Image (cartoon, rainbow, N blue to C red; front, side):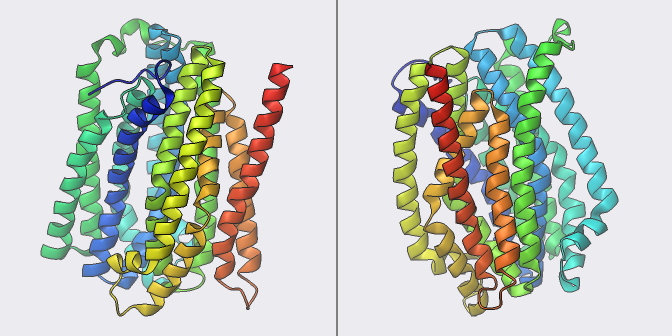
Length: 445
């Protein structure tokens, strides 16, 4: 599996060589939830589908804490790798894995202790709450697999290997499809079967990528002399990890808050939202992955002190993001009803129409979130993770406030939630671009 050095060579080629495996990996990652959605929607029913959708939003929020910590640690790994400081890199591995493992245990304990209260807080209707509790109590046994897989995949990406995770994840996704159909369609285990299939598959990918990392990179294994609390390294990791974690958590907390508002509109809107959000996420996912590849590019070159190469990379990346977003916007707006019908029976016209309206509103403005992902990645890579947090607060805070206000107006209703999302993207973009331009002006002066 090829390792990519992003500090040399033609920028466009290197970025795409690194980004494409990330895109395919994330596509496969999304299939975990899409398969659950399809199987539950087709073989269990609309209430179970609404429960999976609501649970997915909560799971995304809680696992975003772990993923944020992994992303933050990855930024430090990229900088150390760009500096060719292998001992610092190995010490950072020890410190970060200890931190993230501890946080994973805390999240697992909190979910099982407060599950009923969390479901109540989300305003889940009574006819759906039982299914959601069953799904959550089962699927969260996979939290440690989430930690292991994301930790190692982010570590490998930091050192230029973005393809390893793709291979192991592909095997896991195929297993998930087979087990989903077997547990739900054949054994009739319902929503619990879907959760069990996901957890088993997650542990397969986690075990495989951990074993691969250990065998493939013997020089990067943690040795006894690396097991120490180096204060400068720990401080830097904490700064990047905590702020990136905070950014991810704020992002998904905002989504969770919006989900609570959506839930108040009843089961049909919940079901439509559950499906449409996953289609929406799948549509702009490649540009999110390109943003992560761009972040690794910036971090490696930042560590190597190559400022001009970073500027050139920004121009190349911005053009590619713009082209992709325009293309995907056209596809989603044109085919929104057909995408909904993949997961929803054709006779469920109300749910299909609600989801189509959501997709066409969000889909028309994907350029906004494309630029925002670039800004997140850039500020994380140049050791300014707090700015990523502020952009997330602006984007999500505005989304939640507008959703809560506009949805209460009778003539607007649920449409107010949909239009609030792109407004939040563009306001955050404006703030981030202005901050970048002012920072560059100060640096040159």
